[in-house]
Image (cartoon, rainbow, N blue to C red; front, side):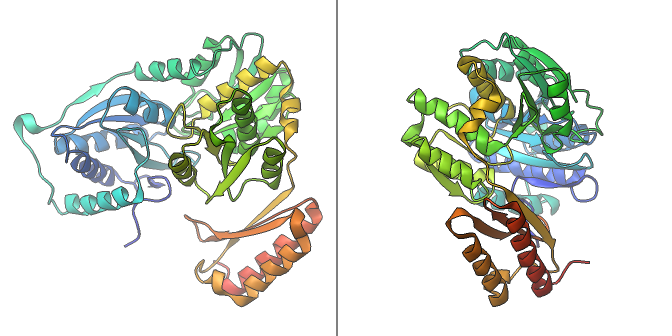
Length: 450
């Protein structure tokens, strides 16, 4: 049986894989786990704007209550809001119903512990055991006063907004910002945060209808924001994804800043203030060579984890570090919150622009981005390629041609039948050629998917 939990909770097409029944059993499983140390554990549940969110929210809450857990419904709030509020408000656990940047037919359920951190693999494995036991009617069913309660608290989003605003001491008055909410979870709270700090805010894609989340908008489709920033002569543009744990930026010239550039800017600010722990910023193996080179030139150290914000967070916690994240825009400020936080990230950079009184394009000039080429090869099987001598030889040959100024990274997707081939270096045409050669060999050796 395939593992139920993926890289970020349980995710899939609603009513095809992620059914109300599965949500119900997940609720029973989670309440059983967190009920080991407390008779009536209290969960905070938040969701994004997908049409399926209310249905799954009710099913999940029913499962929690059926084994004695209590639930507080926060309604539509960003994922990082749940992470922050669970810890700040003293909940025993949290749950978010969201499929992040995925299209609206998908949805997902992920859990946070009482400290606001995502659950480790071993706890998710235990939840899977409980899910099967729940489906077999083996988990307890209290009656009478043993059944849990559901409450609703629409004010919790404002508590989160207050928290984000107070992570900076700088007014944003005088800045013009275009905000793209991806028709998602921060469509209301994002504008509230930015306007509350004094910025002039032009909002786009903040009218969710249940079907338009991430649809040609937000951090995965940033072209509209680039146009809007230039049309309105704005100082910067901010793009979240559907659950607002990601943030990408657009400078006043319409150029995109990715997570590597954002991390570097924020880490340098902390270093200048003497607040960057161990002068280290954490990226992933996908982080640009330019990120590592610039950090070194600026007197900072870098470390690259496996792809996935959970691996970045694990390393940061283990080594007590301040800033880390992914190129995709997951940026973690561990001194403020326990997960990637798109609005927190946006506010930090906006404050930097105001304090430095420099255009964002000039500030971003501290890093030179090397060209990066990525080809996804859809294969019949993504196992065994690491031991294939022909594939290994192709990678070694490409690495030799790129030399010290470039690199090749080949890895299997964690969720799809893909092998990803990435090459990075100063010459784009050379990268495209080398990448395609490796991709063609992988396709021949592993078999292309139908």
